[in-house]
Amino acid sequence: MAKGGTISRAQAVGMMLLAAVLFSSSGLFIKLLDGIPSLAILGMRSTVSFVLFMVWVRPRSFSFSRAAWAAAVCVMGMQLFFIMGNKVAPAANIIFLAYTAPIFIIPMARWLLNERPQPADWIAFGVIIVGMSFFVRDGFAFTGLLGLFFGVLTSFFHGSFNVMIRLLKDSNPAQAILLGHGICMVIGLPFAIGQTVTVTQMLMLGYLGLFQVGVGFILVTLAIKHIEALEANLLLTLEPILNPVWVFLVLDEVPTRLAFIGAGLVLMGVLYRAVKAAREKDEG
Image (cartoon, rainbow, N blue to C red; front, side, top):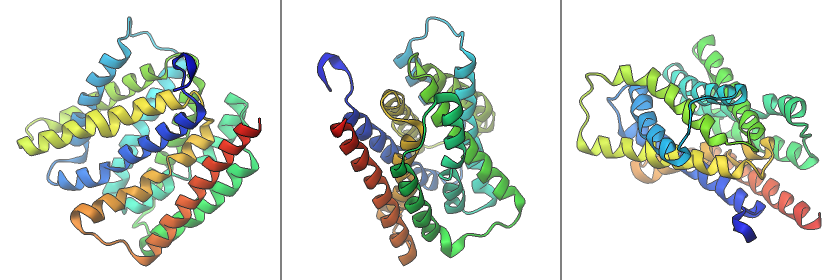
């Protein structure tokens, strides 16, 4: 960290990338938790992360601003509709749609944050979209409009979250995350009633709540104060690329050649934007 305990921009970028790595591990552990309903996983995972954020935030009251409520609803929406989308469409398709969030971020960030996209943002976004289209090309098809609907909702809430959490950068964005996981806990826990969970599964759920979601979101709340909303989304695009990598390493599910090409393009786009931003900062 820089002098005075503040976070430098380079450290903020590193935190956002580490958050993407943590977020990306969800696919593997959800596969390993086969037999437990998705909403039950959401509820149990959110219970752990809610406790973590209670310790982290230590709220003096439960009075939240409108922006905090909006961000909390976004936390709930992007997780809930991602899970629901995975029930009716391939996961890769929902992930692809989720990371088209700049479509929503660009006008919202301009309106609410007065943040204008830079040429490097457009270039990186274009490369990433091309890469992700390769990534899902082998099986991109929806059995009905419902999957597309859930995917678009995931994208909307994902983009809105990046904007709203950036809007809260001068207050305490972690409070909004706390509220969001509280909402997820209330929605998901009823589905966990009556579920038989082994010790190994409990440890997996503990990891998901404590590290994959908990620490991941803490890193985002710390980094977002130093990174614009659109760039944050571009950096987090590493999540859908790393997700199948962990599945491949542990479960030996081999990605296709097109998936490798797409992953490489996405990585190039993310690295290009990160390096370009660092150079602009140095020149400034």
